[in-house]
Length: 93
Image (cartoon, rainbow, N blue to C red; front, side):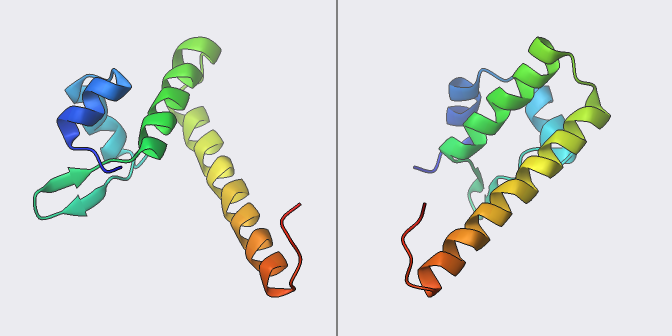
């Protein structure tokens, strides 16, 4: 379900300035639409992860950049592997 900025802020618990900073840093990449950005549940989960990395683990901005990049690579590889398995006629394991 796509969310407006206001719905995302309410769901994620972020403040406006933090959201703007995270979008600028490309930690969050909402869909751009003519009526404004649209956020997904995945964006909410990612925002919660970033918050936990900052407050729970104490990761700095550079550390968060690296962690998010590695996680994105991992998820991309998982999608590619699932696609390869489908093409080979094997169910996901």
